[in-house]
Length: 85
Image (cartoon, rainbow, N blue to C red; front, side, top):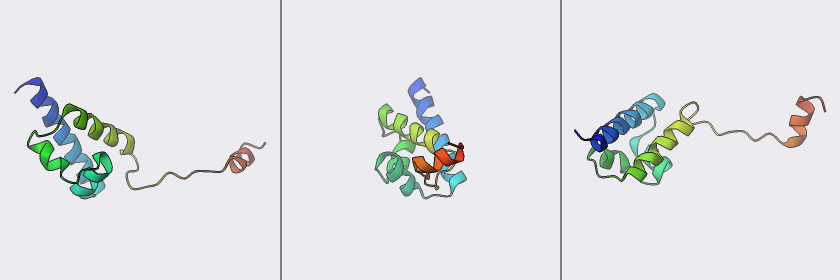
């Protein structure tokens, strides 16, 4: 295997682990990560660019803790009250 193949193989494992751990569908993952429902199948076949792999890894890194939870935005006046200001 070449370094590129190793890199892509590691990305496949990382994506599959994330998908399994979160319980989301592969197509949902693909749409959220890179706007491509078939990206996991293409990744398995080595038919993606390194830029796409980087986007997938970035999505996983940014969503690893709470993948299905939307972040709550707390209005500034509430955060000031919480700090006692």
